[in-house]
Image 1 (cartoon, rainbow, N blue to C red):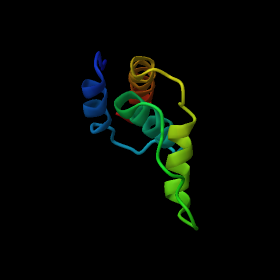
Image 2 (spheres, one colour):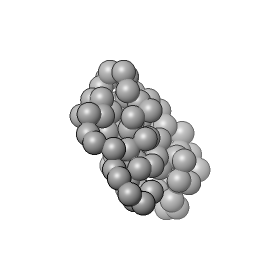
Image 3 (cartoon, one colour):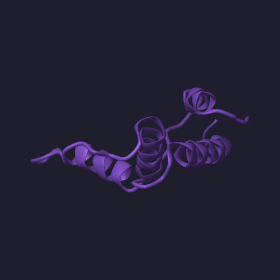
Image 4 (spheres, rainbow, N blue to C red):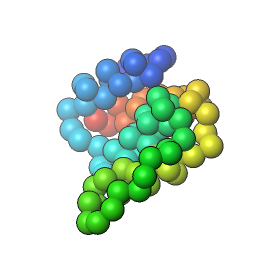
Length: 86
């Protein structure tokens, strides 16, 4: 299975038969947000919302990456994960 576009890669993740681990999911999230929205300019979540904070940080870790570079890395990660999750 191979994906040439971000949309194809997103569609491929929906075919995963088992869930990637949290680290992989956060990496996917951060790359997807960077590819679709660019640098994270949102406010850091407050309080004890650890899930939102983890997602915020995953996206923040991609800061400075162009949308095209992020999309390319997302596609590569999805293709690698597809080998073990489909």
